[in-house]
Length: 257
View 1 (cartoon, rainbow, N blue to C red):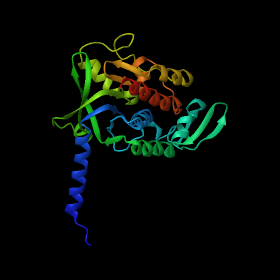
View 2: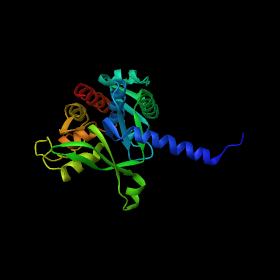
View 3: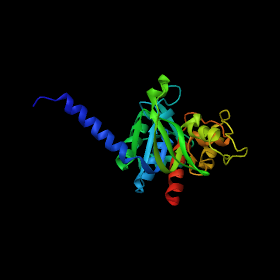
View 4: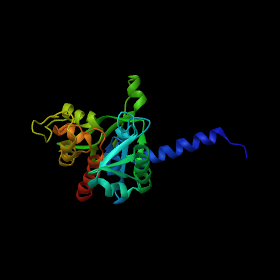
């Protein structure tokens, strides 16, 4: 049978629209498709929660794709190995508490299992604002990333979510919007973004978990966004803290939901 180009187009439009419509009202909306965001989405979806993830780039994976300086290997400490086991990601011991894993295998495995668990991912979608009510965040304002990149004046659309997770990494994209535009202060020492400090891997890995928490009513931070928001240092291409941060924020939200 000859393939019909119009039917192909209809199939893509109809199925995508149905997926988008089904995710305009969710339990949790995650912004940023790095390891922390994907792991959080996996555990939330596995627990039966309705969760969606928005990634502004064409590909997801965040900094994990590139390993360290484009050497596509990552390091994970022993505390995070149960998460690698959960996702069937292979690893080898290097020295002391350092284990290595192929970054491509890691991010593809995280993504595959998260989607299979029920996480819905929309790539090429940017979050340009939040929906707010009195003293809380209730959703996101979204647009196509190419619209943002081209500087086109095209109005966005909105989606509602009980909780939002900023997992955008160093950029803290959602937290910056809230600090700038939403009345009130962040739950940080100064009420503002404290800013990321220079590299200290051991300290950063510990603080990533400590800083994974609610930063404004309805808004959580995870992964490198947590350290940048609360003033922790960067950690480089070691990803145990990122994985554990995603697990932690998921557990806290599951309890609250």
